Image 1 (cartoon, rainbow, N blue to C red):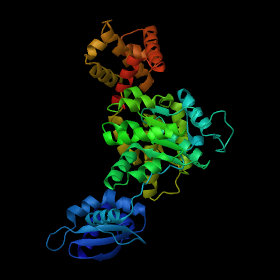
Image 2 (spheres, rainbow, N blue to C red; image 1 turned 45 degrees about the vertical axis):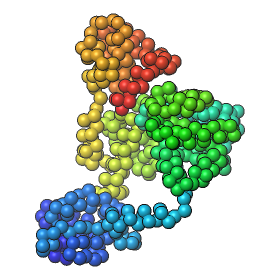
Image 3 (cartoon, helix red, strand yellow; image 1 turned 90 degrees about the horizontal axis):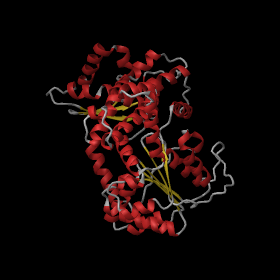
Image 4 (cartoon, rainbow, N blue to C red; image 1 turned 120 degrees about the vertical axis):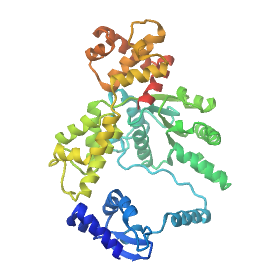
Length: 459
C-alpha cells in the first residue's frame, strides 16, 4: 500500500530506520481498501506503542489519493480481524439481548492477601480482627483455630482515605473465606448498583435476590457510592436484613465513617453501625517501603534500595500513587525492549526519563503548608490571615489546630517547622496537634466531621 509506505518513510526521517523497522514495519498487513488499513501486531506491547506514539500521527497524515483519511484497524496475532467500534458495540448489545440474565461479580486480585498486607501501627486492629474472623494465619495462609467466629461483629465497617488498604483487606478476607469453602461475594458498590438496574430491566429481581441473599459472606466496597441511589439502597436494606437475621457476615468499606455518609438513608446508616466501625490511617514511610517491596516481588521485578528510595521520595503521597509509578516503570522498560533489565542496574537518570510525565503530575499536585492553610480556611469560610492570626475564639482556634495537625500528618513536618509557619512556639504546636489527634481517636463529632471533610479535599 503506497500510502502506508510513504507514512513509514516519513517516520524513518523522524524516528530513525531502526525504530520504524522494529515497531512499524513488523506490523503485518492483513488487508486494505481505499479508506481502511487492517494491521496485525505481534504482541500487546507493540499495540501499546502504536497507540501511544503513532495513532494521532496516522490520523493526521495517512491519506489516500483523494486526500481522504485512511483509518488503521489494529489487532493482535491469532485473533479475529478487528472490527470498528460501532460494530463491536452493536455485536455486544445483540449478545447481551439474547443471552440469559446472569450476575458477573468483581474478580479478586490474587496478590491482595493477608500475607501481603502492610499494616500501619494504627491499622493493626482492623487487620488482626479480619484475620481472626477469617481464621487465617497471615503468614502461611493456612486455616487456624480462632476464638472469634463469623458474625462476632456484624457488620464490620472499615473506613479510610485513598491508599489506606481498604480494598486489600476486603479481598484478603474474601480469599481466606473462599479457601474455607464459604459462599463469598465480593462486590464494588458500582457493580451492586449495576446488578440492581439490570435485574429490574430484565424482570429478574428473583435471580438477583437469590444470588445475594444466599451468600455466607457479603463484602461491599465503596459504599459511599450508594449516595442518591434510592432503588439500590432499598435492595441493599432488605439484603442486609436478610443476611443479618440469618447470621451471615457482612463486611463494608467506605471513604468515611457511617455518620459522615451523604444521601444514604438513616435506616441503612444505623445498620452500618450495629457491629464495629474501624478506621484505617495512611501508611507511614516504613509502611510504604513494605508495600513497594511486596508489589515488586509479586511482579517479579527486584527493587534495589536506590530505586526504592527514589520512588519513595517522589511518589510517597499514598500507596496507590507509589504502585502506579512502579507498574509504569516496569511496563515502559519492557516497551523499550529491556525486559531483562532489573532495578539493580537501573540508574536514577533512566528512571526519571521513563517516569517524566508521572513525576510532573506529582510535582504539580504536591501538597504544601500554604495549600493546607488555604483549604482549611475555605472549609471554615475564614481568611488564611485570620487562621494564622492571634484571634483565640473557637471560630479560629479549631481551624488553626486542624491546619497544624494536617501539616504534621500529611507532610510529616517537624514541630519546629510547623511553629515557624504558624508563628507559634514548639510547645503550642505539640499541644494543638495532640488535641486534634485525641478528638480524631475518640470520634469527637465536631473534630471528626471537619477533619474527614478536609482530608477528602486534600486527597
